[in-house]
View (cartoon, rainbow, N blue to C red):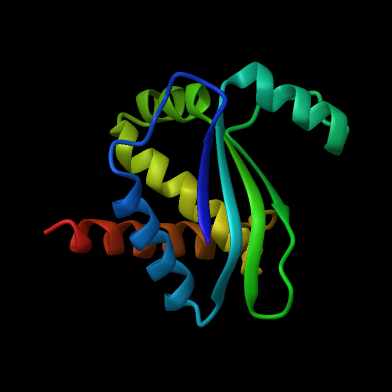
Length: 140
């Protein structure tokens, strides 16, 4: 089950479309959906989580807590809508595409994709692009 929670004024425009897409993302990697919670928040909310649980005193766009058991994907994925919007502006991209990228990014972490080493970053970016296209195909 995929759930959305909002700790800010932001609300997804069509939750069922996102749920369907996220299920396809998980299926495309041969995993199953357990319980995945997306929590949309602002920078300060996510900074407090980063400080409290990860001992990091930095702003970030996403924090993923992985509760996966075998091939069943479960986790809490916290996303700073402010940071996503800022990143979209910095990269001269669109907010919706950047949001999809970050949403997929959290799932990909739970499915064992990393982004610490250069080679891993390239693979993560490639997978993000692949998963974003699944959303756009679905909307046609």
